[in-house]
Amino acid sequence: MSDITISRGVRSNLLALQNIASSRETIQGRLASGKKVNSALDNPTNFFTAASLNSRSNDLGALLDGMSNGIKTLEAADNGLKSVTKTVESLQSAIRQARQDKSWKGDSYSFTAGAAGTVSISNGSVGSTAVNISVTSTDTIDDVVKNINNNSSLTGKVRASNDNGKLRIENLSTSDLTVTNSGSVGTGSTVGGNTVRADLITQFNDLRQQLDRTAEDASFNGINLLRGDKLSITFNETGSSSLTIQSKGAKAINATNLGIDAQATSVADSDSGLDAVLGKLSTALNSLRSQSSAFGANLSMVQNRQDFTKSMMNTLKGGADNLTLADQNEEGANLLALNTRAQLATSALSFASQGDQQVLQFLR
Image (cartoon, rainbow, N blue to C red; front, top):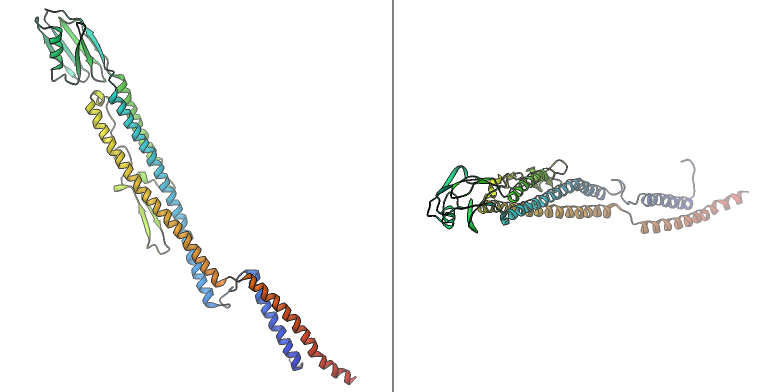
């Protein structure tokens, strides 16, 4: 169409209409996409800067999943520690109840003054070797009681007393005691052990097993911090900021490592034996509370980094948007103005073409 010649006025108005159409097309594209920079051709600097910001935001977003899993793993470990702590407190309760119980069993035997004899005591906490207490013809019931209570082999294991003229012997243990008498003291018998204390030690051992089972179940996504597993969490896209979480000494939280051993029933034969167990349980509780505090600090740290990462992602996306997003109100106003200009340019083009029409009329 280059062989067609149009007047300068028409050409000028035609060019204006073409420019308006091009600008309107650009604005309509911005309104449709919501962006003023859709490609590097629109603004290379803003386009590539925004792409870099969005890329970093996406990288941080991928790390959030690891942080979320880390938080859940720590929460699972904390739940396990709370349950283990309650179990240890229950173990303490069982031992304290045993410590307080004094329901020792005993038996009373007739005593004949002026007659010699022997009191033989064995089994129970005394052992299979019998301890023999001689009774002379001059001994009174109180003398026999005194001789039994003063015997170092029987101290804390047997207690004798005067039961209205009878010799009463109490079994201060959890297993059966054998008493064999001859002469001045009536026939012997088997004195049963303290079943309350024995049952509480059985309960203690059952609870101890539950402690280990609870710790084994405190895992999340295959990681169990109470088993000594290692949890690694990365906080930035370069990997230069990270946190490794593990139990103290990388040791599992279980009865053995806490120093809580299974107990034989005989530990309840003496208060001192029970006190020793209570001391170990107190140490175990302190260890659990220390570990719980360490995990709590780690959890707080990961949660803080999670919140920081979310805020950083918003900042990066906001910066990218500022570089590329279009102002819808402004672009709408621009389109309205262009439409108005297009109407004016069309009218101007019509006026410009009237000159050519006048020449045509003159030729007619």
